[in-house]
Length: 205
Picture (tube, rainbow, N blue to C red):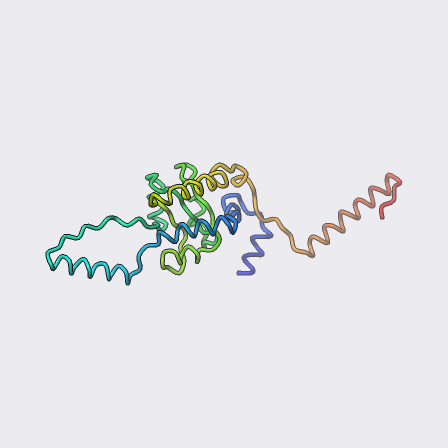
């Protein structure tokens, strides 16, 4: 992992992959996770309990009408379909998906379909929201009335920061050399400056 991290620092990284280094800040992440936690899907235990209750009610002749729950959607294929159908209101992508090729096209799709998206640190954080070890991306398709304003505010903020940000699509990453190489380059530059100064009859300290 360390070797890979250093390699990504040294080599030039194309914008499609370098964009995953631009993540939302702590305060944005806190407000986003607070909203997403309200719409966590039910656990296996809760689902089992609900089905047992429904079976009991049906056995007693009662008709239980249940509304479709409003929860966050996860799974790469599922989220992709929601974006393509323009049903997703907000898409959250993890920055450390490996291999990155599985999600590097997702921001472009979000921009094409005009769906607000953001990149957040840690796939494990997204995983805890959906009771998995990790999750590549999650999406919100709907929220309750009381959370509409908060979702709109986050969507507008992320749209300006990611969707409409042309710089993020053009900026290359990497190309950072190690300390030794930087010192060697600095020494070479200084030597060139001294040489040029000598030619011009100046003295550099």
